[in-house]
Length: 370
Image (cartoon, rainbow, N blue to C red; front, top):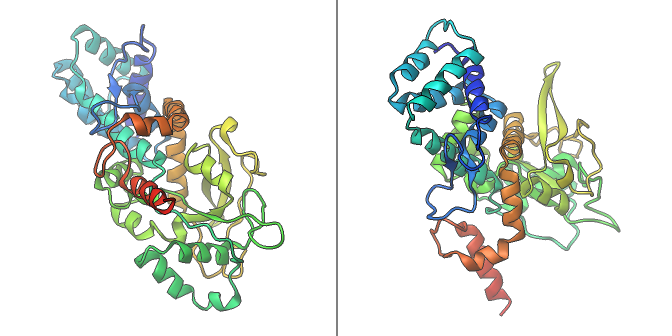
């Protein structure tokens, strides 16, 4: 398949599907649901989700290719021929190609469960995986926590402790050394008379590091820019972490209201604050959309690795998918009803509804409060 036009043809098709009558009650590709759950809180029209995934993917051609492989399974001969035509110089532009394929699917009642399943795959293993608040959490520190000069000499030991032992305090100290004792998005101080406690935020959630299907979704979504090996190596590493004030952290990790865009300029990476959902950005954040975030201004800024540009751009792209697909509204409702939902669904270790690490933290909290 020619790589220069796959995404444009697929996007023309899913956009056309989105314009058909009664699309809300009868989505043309069915409903994407959380895989493994008998009933799903997170239902999203599959065509809308797949459109958002392709539009915001760092590798739209690779996702579009995956879509076409599943479309070809519809068992309609003309549709198969039109998919195969994209192998060579297709004589049809995106709009004409989409119109013909769409008409054939409607007239022949094309069976498209494979595309519904593809939507559910990305919903479960990309969208929900990034919204999932589970995973390692940096403990709150009440003592003075600004690293001293001696700690700079221990960077290698801290890095080993963070990556091999998954130490959150070591990771937090590395980021303090790299970026200094002030939140880069709120300007609040982490040290001094009037301070806030730093939250060491994983840019992509820590909880994805042992989930092969999430790795698979990320590899396709990024066009193999980020592989499973890279994710596992950097999951608890300065390349995947920033220290931020707690409200800013929540609007990034739970609301996915903002992200960091990394752009290369003059052989150097620059990082910019990007708003995804304006009404959900924490009011503590002082940056405007497009403002530069200056990492590496701490005492160890020349030694501790900056955030990985591809990791930053992956998080931002997924946040945009969640907003564009309508999944963000579903998640907001889930956040509002979180405690009620915990009481209404079967909750057990290994269950599909609540991550094990979240259950463990709540269990530990209950035990400690006795």
